[in-house]
Image (tube, rainbow, N blue to C red):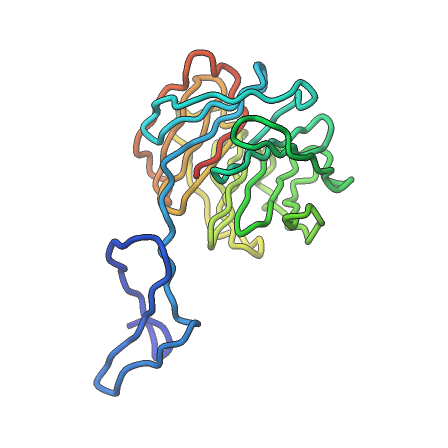
Length: 253
């Protein structure tokens, strides 16, 4: 019991979905309302890593086993990050300031222009049918609707000066910084909540993904994916396929 209006409890394991939460005390039982529902999110079992050089998406299991590859067209020649949901891939292209959407076979569905100020985009994330794109030059996060209408912007912390990837879950935005080798965690309004250090071997981060339980960071130089817990502790890592030699982004789904 934290206070008369707040408690902290540990939820037992359960299937993905929404459950009702009710509190019973000597004074009675709380009313069942939608405001106190608890949502279990599914954990990811697939990772998509985009490769800039060969213009391929490498799809791995979370155990590191390569499942398949998907190619994409030459017009999308400066791929810097990827968002995925199991139905579509969205690849961020820094050079032409666009996001290209493909189906799981690599067939182009459409492309979308970024806001003119969002000219040095380095990372993309999707959550609840909205997109977040982090910009390296102005150190801002641009939030877009599912139709790519600009909804707003958030400022990065001044120390977060070399962003190379972004992930979003139900409560946090995480931005990985290549210069100081840290993960910056913000709330959804852009207020910095804390930072965690990458392991020393993870020295050239190029993308970050999370499912709310694990965090994956792909490294461009040593061609590995590092998995951390949400507090920043290293859990394990795996090597990318040898052909996946220029990894620029990752997402989990």
